[in-house]
Image (tube, rainbow, N blue to C red; front, side, top):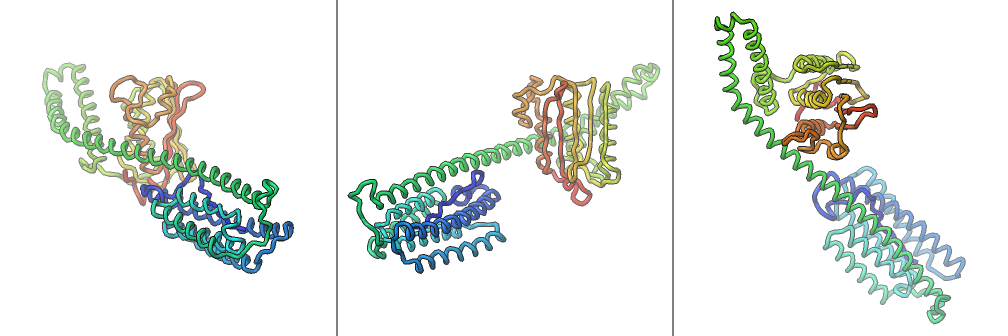
Length: 449
C-alpha cells in the first residue's frame, strides 16, 4: 500500500521563490506555512497508511511484510518529528529544503510500493499526485526533476519489487479487488488534485492581488516624490517674491498717506499677516524636504502638540462651531515634525470645506495607538469616493487637481505604520479617523517620513 502526502497550500500564501522571486518578506512567511502544511499532511499520510495496512491484512487477509513497512513508517515519523522541531524554530524555508521534503515523500511512496507489489499495485498511480505537486510548487527544473525521479522509481518498481499475495483477477470487472483498488486510486488522485489545484489557483490570485497592491503603492510613492520635488522647487522660487512683498508692505505701512487712514492701515496689517502665513507654508514645505529655514522638529508632548496645532488652525479658519476633545494624558512625550502637522491640517481643512458651520476634533489613546477623529456635518462622501479613498485625484469637489490632500494623508499615515479610515455618519456628514502607532512619534525615534 502506498504513502501519499499531498502538499496542501494555504489559500493566502504561495512561496515566491518557487513561483516568482518578487517579494522576499511575503515569500518567507509563505514558504514556512507550506512547510508546516507538508509536515501536517505527512502525519495524516502516516496515520492513513497504518490504517490501510491493518485493514488489508485483517479484512482481506493479504500478506504484507509488516516489519519492513513499519520501518519505513518509523523513518517517516522520525523525519517528521525532526522537521517539526526544525521549522518550529526556523521560519525561513529555502528552495532546496522544500525540494528535499518532496523527495522524502516520493521515496516513502516508492519503498511502500516496493513492499506491496510494485507496479502491479493499483495505488502506484499516486505517483501522478507527486508529479502534480512538483509541477505546481517547484520551479521548472525542479518540476522536471520530480517527474524524472518518479519515472525512474516507477520503472525500478516494474523490475524489482516484492510480489503482492492477492487474487489478481481483473476479468471479474467491478467485483475485482484490483479494479476496485484502481478506482479508489483514481478517486484519491482526482479528489486531491482538484482540491489542491483549486486552492493553489486561489493562492495565486491572492498573491497577484497583493503584488498589484504593492505595485500600486510604489506608483503612489513615486507620485509623492515627484510632488515633493515640485513643491520644493516652487518653495525656493516663491522665497524671493515673498521677501520682496514683505519689504514693500513694511514700507507702505510707514507711509503717511496710509497711516492717516485706519482702514487702509488695517488692510496692510492683514496683508502682512497673510504674507507671514505664506512664509510659514513655504518653510513647512522646505522643512519636509529637509531644507529648513531655521525651524526644526521640537520635543514636546502629544497633548501639547495637538493643543497648539488646534489653536493655530482655528486662528486662521473662521469655523462657526468647533468642538475639540483631547483625552490624551499629560506628559506623554513625542517628537513631531511639520509633515505630521500638515497631515492633520489637511484632514481638518477638508472637513472645514465640507462643513464650515460645525466641526469636531477628538484625540484619544487606544493602548499603543494615537487615534484622531475629525467629524463634520457636510454632504458626506460619495460611495465611489469612499471606494477610492486615498487615491490621487479622487475628489467630489469636481475641480482638476483636487483630492491630493487626503492622498498625502493616507500615504504619510501608512509610512508611519498607521492607517486612515473614512465613513459617513448616520446623522449626516462624514468621519475621518486617523490612527498612528505611538512608537512612531515617541521621543526616542521621532518621525521619519
